Image (cartoon, rainbow, N blue to C red; front, top):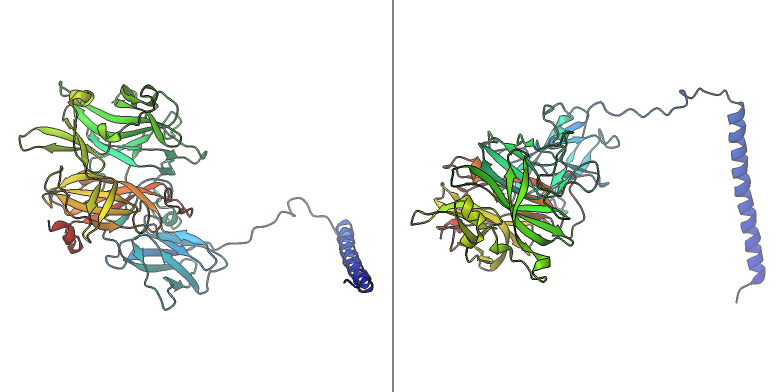
Length: 495
């Protein structure tokens, strides 16, 4: 039972205390008002707040591979109060937090495929004393077989290093992010095309493919830092533009990009297209060709349309999609093999046969591959190509339901024929709860006798269940290097 007398006393004390607080506040407001009325008034310019001065120069941190001294991009440096820096293509971070300059600072260091050794408490990082104008090197150990060379697309490729006067001659493309890549040799250049593309001006960007060209040998060296001199296709205002505004609502996705000669010997750049509706499903597919004059892709024919098939599902592997490669069979006949990664369709190497679906021949394509450790692994998308160094066909693909991420592991395997059988696969790259899909090899960029195998893929948080997006890096193409003479690849090369 409550004591009414005690309750009344308590309320009285509370009211007196509240009255004192109100009186104090009122007195303070009165004093402030009095002073504002009687103190000399400053001019409007004099009452502006002057920003606090900041260090004239940040502390330059460079992340390097302890094995070869190469700069390592995409490494995250995280303070104990959760401020995150990410190294750019030069491996550089501009550290400029005024509250931490000149004192000992712990930085957690993390990055896919690279690490710092854990201390006694399991923390992986380094202690530094950041000072204005100072350069600090942080070495990391590579844990993946593949070596990260850097980001190819997006904004701020060298943004951190540019704060120190480096790479200032490089211009921004106007593109902040883009989906998976296609490329083909055509008209004396490498033609590049990307999927859905992010711009700065609005969350919804370009959904009709974007593209560019480079020289046939766009890299002078195969180590970081890397930068490709893309000549982007732009509109009259100079902004990146769509290349495949094919009739129909929704995005246009291209695939199977290849340059083919017709009967008169004219080279034609062609591709397969899909029109997309929510939630990321096709409602129409067809074949299209690059218009050399208007520099856009135009539809040639429709292959399949959902509305005309009674809702019947379309089988992607029955159409010329994926990453095509050329192959000459034992009889000397030239073919284009379409696969993603392993061939599921072959077409005679001619424009007319590509255009005539009655000339297409279906192939059996494996859905799983045996790993060097024994169990079967599910194959997602990827690419194959012929390695003169290995004198074999090689494949790189993303694994479905990997141990570290649903679509974050890249695997390598070999075969004597592009039609298989494919040998045991070995993991060459892993991402921790992050996606890296649709890898594309670039055998065309390296000398035929070289053991260097270049590949890129789309780095994104999508499909990973991880909402923590890497600033600047997310939803972009990252280039890697795999050395086929690495002894650690032997288990996949012994078949």
